[in-house]
Image (cartoon, rainbow, N blue to C red; front, side):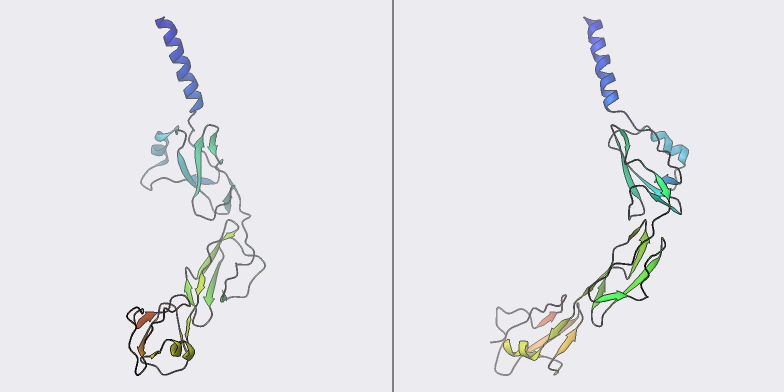
Length: 217
């Protein structure tokens, strides 16, 4: 009976081991896996084979790109029952980019080309009074451009809107004023009116083309 139990346990262990087959150290031609800078490759190999679920990162050498095309510097792969997935592999650099993406109310500062070499960089700028949000540069990486910026809309303060709310600009007398997003402005009540208790503050801010107007009654 005891012998039979040992056989069952041995078979169970064998099945579990087969189901949880670990992954060997990933050998990546023309690339390398992430490791802390103070660790040598020999030291890092001591942690392998890796168990199922282990997440790893790798990067390809210059002029090579990851097979699964990632716009990030590091590309991820993990240990599964079938081995490393996706298989970490570096291919000969073919990651050219087409024209950079267009943005609303802005454009690139250079003449657009039909094709850009890897690591090419393009600069954006916004139209007058629009505020650029994000990096002003995009870079061609692995056949994809990095995230393009956006141009935040300015605010327009008009005479009609001020009349409707019985307010005026406290410091300026112009009928129409343009403000960049993020800029402050201050209103005051016109003669004979006072601030509505439920009104927003008389000092407000332009937020992406929107003004929370105060009211006087």
